[in-house]
Length: 251
Image (tube, rainbow, N blue to C red; front, top):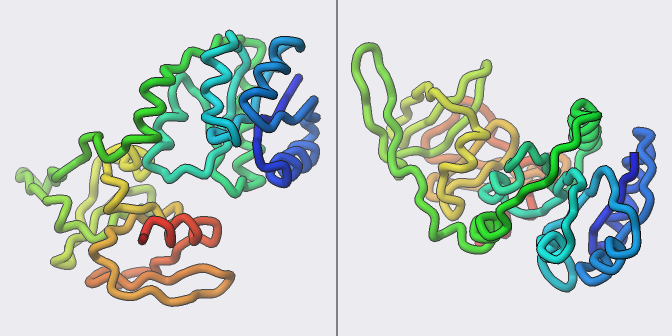
């Protein structure tokens, strides 16, 4: 398997290379810019798999694909907030959110290997992806949810929701009135439906509403504990790897 890394931050590229070596995946080369990548692809046989950062020092890495007809499989490595992650799910493409987790990396590589020897050409709509990355505010997001209660349907406005959370394989919303309702969806699907200026996924279990935050307290292992106005059924903790993005989101 021929693998390359395209990443403008050299320490991050070396870290990813070491992580791949730990799971017996050898990296052929590391590229650090759009210009360098285009030159490399013009002179070399294209790899089987590319680990691709989105924002490079001289532009978006999509410019490489707009210049070179690349058929390689791609696993995105990105620090973008989760509102944009739907962009990387197109055509069964995988993504890894920085800082990259070892288990997630191994799962992504196994996912790629499981599809061999099939060779599906990459076919990305870069214009749509760039719109999702650059202009998320212009998109339409959910304004209400319909909840089935027995034979009845109840509408819950988005402004009345303090958080969404998963529990026992179910997904729930919690309202400012202190009520919990089961939803027929997943947190992953909600990534595409929630307005990113208002809702943030702080860990694998919770999306929280910025307007429902009552207090924030330092927690163990460089994490943050969030106190919401009404929700108090479980600890609401910002995962350590998401604290920096969370603080940026608050601003």
